[in-house]
Length: 300
Image (tube, rainbow, N blue to C red; front, side):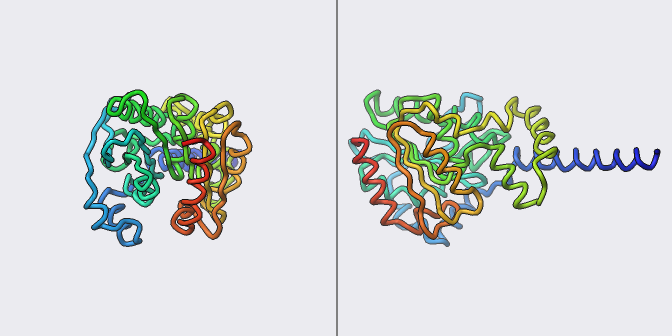
């Protein structure tokens, strides 16, 4: 009996230890520095240094509703009343979205890139996958309206976690004219379940339930509270859904499910031969054409 109790105690402690470790990975992802991401994008050919450095830009710092600083780069176009806000993915920085700038600069959009909380040059001590980040995005939208007036048009384009953030934001803010969501997850719990099996070969129960307990203690949120597919059920704002057909990090089926959930104006593009966050880079001409069609369909 004592041996059995000892084994069960060790097993329980092991499960709790693994679950706690998983919660720390979720809360504190290992992020790359601005310098690392900038050089990675340059080396991959996604940033042309001469072109990027030649653009007129402004460094902008605003306050999050939660008290920390949010850092961004703003690229104004003289006389333009249209602004696109670009949202990067997890562990990265604003430089990951520079590749999308050409799509909007040629359409005379002002461009705003920014670092999410706990990433790049922004503050914040934890990552919550949209639970708090959607309000940071709302603060940036407030800033754009303050700069350009109430009658300006704003779009938001994001990839991966950035796409999931903007979908959650769509539920709380009707001022945005359109969204482009490239390879978002449908819910935090479901993507964690998928990654847990794929990377660690572990079942969701009991690990995610216990990890969620630690996550709740730190964030006053939960894995289930981050659910883009639920957030967009009643959203009227037009959304262009994009996903790499060969994405093995976040399944394209998540985007397909959200496309079918969304009511009203929407468009779907499953990019061929593209993995995670590679839809545009591997299909630039088609991506550009479909974005043009989307804008035409919504009267922009």
